[in-house]
Amino acid sequence: MSPGPSASSSVSPASPTPPTPPAANGQWYPAEWPDRIRALAAGELTPVAPRRAATVLLLRDGADGPAVHMLRRRASMAFAGGAYAYPGGAVDPRDDRPVAWAGPARDVWAERLGLAGDGAAAQAIVCAAVRETFEEAGVLLAGPTADTVVADTSGDDWEADRAALVDRELSFTDFLSRRGLVLRSDLLRGWARWITPEFEARRYDTWFFVAVLPEGQRTRNASTEADRTVWIRPQDAADGYDKGELLMMPPTIATLRQVAPYGTAAEALAAAERLDLTPVLARASLVGEEIVLSWPGHDEFTKHVPTGPTGGATS
Image 1 (cartoon, rainbow, N blue to C red):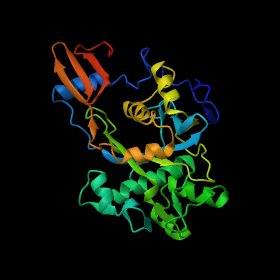
Image 2 (tube, rainbow, N blue to C red):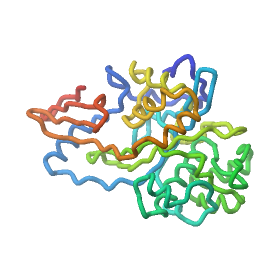
Image 3 (cartoon, rainbow, N blue to C red):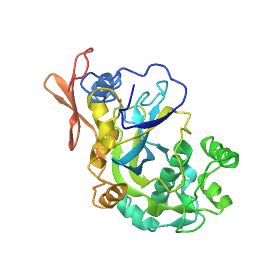
């Protein structure tokens, strides 16, 4: 599976063959969804409470415009196996602990993230975004002072700390404190918010952020959950999805389409301030002889699911 001629990638050993995407495009659509949708419509399924999470569209400028850092989840992963995504993951309960902080105040972030009055929750989400980017891409949005960023995160000592963070043996706030680093929240911009559908077994309330790769730092495939990483122009990635070559979840392809028009990473960050962070949540409704699955404001993801015991979804 090739992301396209303009992509550069760092590839680790090959994984098992990823799931075959639908013929029409590369939208991730689990086989169990129709049954779960029917169960939800019949009142037989109690939705799981979503966990808060954060993910980051890490951008860098190139000769042909900005590229975004993406990883391909291993086919063996229980959630979205084989799909391309961004570095990200769930909030750690310790992400709201005291930490040296630069950028907008926590209450300002809370307003932006739709959590007015809950600065601690806003910090935890921003902290999760920075932590997961370091854990999965080796990129750290922090520095010795409020206006600097670490220039190099390679070396055995950094890798030992990163591994301890992944294993949850070390909290991110303790990691920053021990190294005398300030979390640079000003390097992030809120981009979107998506909530996993109510019929999904694993649910996340995920905030999407954009950030620029700090000068001197380099990404790498640091995640055990990914078998490949790639820098790719957002439009090329979207084209790969449309051709059925790249498998993605609706939030991933939607955010790619949103960022694709911008000519530089700085333009994308500036545009983020104007974007609406109202959460997007899929709806499943019974219409005649089928269940219609839709994401408000994103008609391309609409699916029609037969109400019978068999049959796949159609666009």
